[in-house]
Picture 1: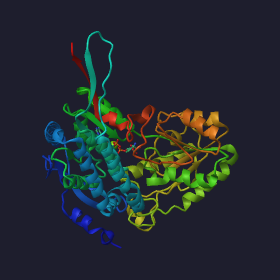
Picture 2: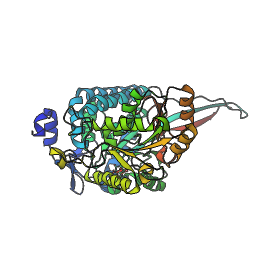
Picture 3: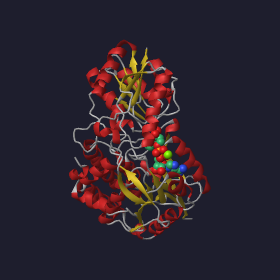
Picture 4: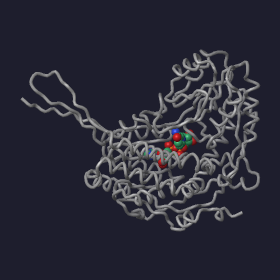
Length: 499
Ligand code: NAI
Ligand code: MG
């Protein structure tokens, strides 16, 4: 069956207009170099579109446009009107939800149910939540004790031009995590989508123009990390970089930011523990821990990739998770019955199958999965089976390194103190999960885990009002919630001598 036959008509016309151009100063333009690159459907290995490839000069033009808009048109837009624009964009996201979801499936590979029922509503809600903040940002008046008569207050001002560098695992959601608060507070943005998944960001650009955002407020420049990404991170007129991706890239960005000491927030990876106590509701914990790792083929920064299970129930629980994993329907994300799609790329396939090999060489045993899937149409794409590793020692590479694939390392534990120590034995600190009916255990674990997000009797739950971000080498800064506003604003102290 030709995949194109199932596609939304609006999506077909979007894909027909090629090469896809980048958005700078309200106009769709080619790269200065004229270069393009191809983006691939990871379910089939087929080229989806060729896309204008931004490099240093394009980024510079985009930053200049963002700077002009920041001090010009955008500065004149009142907070309530910024809120209105964000609400209009949220409405357009919903109105075009079928098409956007399909486009994300084609470019990223995620299952359509996840894209349509998870991603699209989440993007719309992130826009609406942040729209609400636009009219609620304010400074304070502050009483000081200096001699004389003073009127002292603070202004909370937008930080300026924001560079948003986002990954491929949740293209539209990670972009919106940055765009929505930045725009709500009055910043302008240059967005660099991941080279693997530029398409939904470009479609978002069309909707941003349709919503009525002035030219230059949002500029969208697809390109590669070491060229376009680095140019943005180094740019002397960018005030802030908001980044999501690998921790080693985060380190490069921090160094690149030193030139003008721009602000940086980093949402990096993890090796998050998901802990099952013997008293847990196992009916809930089996699918809960399974989807904690297998969702989006394990390509989730906060995936519960280390499954710690209390000794008493270890064998029974791990075999049930393995059994559950074997029922997960893997396939092309466009098929509504698909529960798990392909990995993003050949590179990622090599990385994950490399870890499957390393795990087995180190002595871990795949009780389910452990290999690439090539049956039928899958041979053309980048599919691997959901994998549960048993016989894992905590110092093995598969228990320490972020695999970013559907691979979980199961490890038994004796008691709470031991599992907390094991859980915290990592450079990462993004998330953690615990399954138990004992309220004391739950609170003790929540407090003891060195991680930015803790889920008890649930996993990977999100809401625009709840902050998200890492401890340790999982990054700094919190996205979502009220804390996100601090990333995009700065405080000015004003002293008025009235004497
Ligand atoms: P990456 O960190 O290289 O890519 C993320 C974004 O950073 C992309 O837009 C990329 O173009 C950009 N980038 C890359 N190098 C850059 C540079 N020197 N300067 C500025 N921007 C740059 O991640 P990659 O290589 O695509 O994935 C590799 C591994 O990273 C994955 O297997 C996974 O372990 C981890 N990862 C974690 C993510 C998360 O959500 N925490 C997301 C993506 C990847
Ligand atoms: Mg990379």
